[in-house]
Structures are given as C-alpha cells and as structure tokens.
Amino acid sequence: MNTIKMSVVNIMIITNIEQIPGKEIIEELGLVHGSTVRGKHIGKDIQAFFKGLVGGEIKGYSDLLAEGRDEAIERMKEQAQTLSADAIVNVRLTTSTITGGAAELMAYGTAVKLS
Amino acid sequence: MDWFFKEIEKFNAELAKAPDWLLDIFGGSTIVDAIVNNSLQFFIFTILGWLIATFLERKHISYLAKKEQQLVEIKLNNVKKIVNDYQGDSAFLMGSVVMAHDYFRGFFIVLRKIIGGNISAYERITQRGRREAIIRLKENALNQGFNKVINVRFDSTKVGNHITAIEIIAYGTGIKVTEG
Image (cartoon, rainbow over all chains, first blue to last red; front, side, top):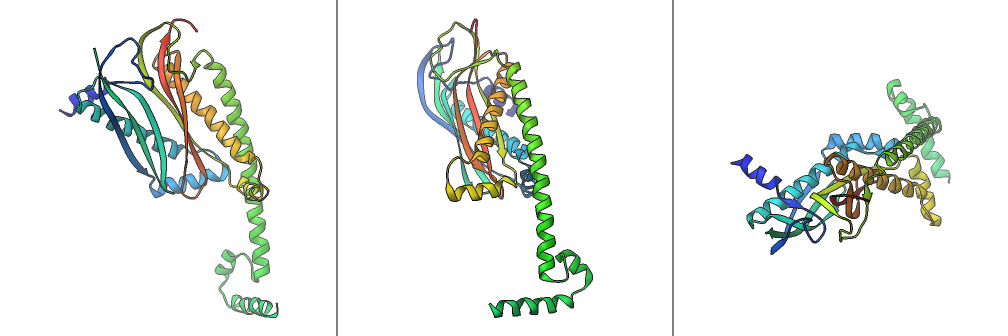
C-alpha cells in the first residue's frame, strides 16, 4: 500500500510557474502546503561549531535542511493527492528560524487537475 | 582601586594552595600568568584558524569558477513565461547550501558594527553561498536532463545555534529548450 502511494506521489509534476509546460490545466483545486520543523541533534551542533572555526560550508546543516525540505515537499504532494490533483503549480519555498537550534521549512502551491 | 589589587592577591594566595594539575589547566601559578598564557594560546589559535580559513576560501572560489565554466550551457532566468520552443517534461529543482564565516572574522565584525558600513566578512559568505547554490541548482538540472531553469528565486535564512550561519536556497522550474 505504502509503495503504491509513494509511486503516485512521485509522478506528480510540480513547477514554480503558473502552468505546466506541454499540458493544459482544466481545474484549480486550491492551495496546498507542507511543512516540517527540523532540529539539529547536539552532535551536529558540536560538529558545526568546530567547522565554524574555519568557516565555509557546514555540511551537517546543509544535508539536514535539504532533507527537511524534501519532506515538506513530500507532505505537500500528499495533501495534493488527497484532492486528487495531477500537478502543483506556482510552488514557493520559505524557511524561518524558530529558535537557535530549529528551522521551519515550508512549501506551498496550487493543486491543479490536468486534461 | 585598592580593593581590586587586594582581591587579586587573595586569589593568588588561594591559587598557591591548588594542586599542580589544576594550575596546568588554569595556565599559570598567578592570575597575570594565566591571562598572558591563555591569551597567547587564543591568539595563536585564531591566527591559525584565519590562515586555514583564507586557504579554504581561495580553494572554494577557484572551485566555483571552474564549476561555473563547466555549467555555462545551462541558462537561468526569472520570468514565468516560456519564450523559446520547449520539449518534454518540466520539474521543480532546488539547490541549497549553509555557509558560515570563520571565528576570527567574528572579531572584525564586532568592531565593524560599531562604525557601520559594509561588513565584508558577511558579504563574502553570502556571495560564495549564492554562487554555490546556483551551481547545485544547475547540477540538478543537468542530472535530470534539462538545459534551462526558469523563474529562479532565492531565499535565505539564519541558522545555527552558537555560530553565525546562513542558509541560501535557489529554486526554479527546469525545462528543455531546443535552442538558447
């Protein structure tokens, strides 16, 4: 069941423009969004502190936020799927810091049905 | 000021009773010794950090220049309309990076904030981060077989608990165009 659901979610097309190239939008189903709050565990914080001494990219945080963002998009897709949408257009991403150690990652867009 | 020197003498007298291992950690047998030793270590530490950071920064900038040359055929824009002839699919693409400045530059930033103006330490990490994010976006496009990314947007947030780090993300819609 889960694998079927995943494959359905994966074929959903998302873009951040107001159309799907090569396809026609026949119905607008409304706003969908997905969000996740990610905290770093203390090991990553310590690692980041030492990396912060010399500067540059903080790989631990980069990976963590990228994973979080993928999850937010996945949740948005799941919500769109419950509306039986084929695609999501005009997707926007936002991030905000909740406290020093946690960030909220959010994705939102408009679910649509294609011809 | 008399009370201050009296306090220091009292502290030194207490320190004389302490075991050797504790004095080693503290950095000296009197408080003045400890301050001198510790600040010397601190100074060497930050200078070393600064040298490593400068080296890594140069390496990163040359890496960015090389990558930008390789990925020059992938075009970006930030308009929603598709002007050229396109073919095939489209997909949502992202590229993100978290960048931090080094510890040593933190002192310059503190001093700089007193008089204001351009804070070049922050400018450097945001510029490097943005170039890196674009490169990752372009690499994602290349891996999925797209040669153009339209409607590219940037977003950035402060992250990090005890360090100043900024997350920069670039995202857009990848398409395949027949020319230019």
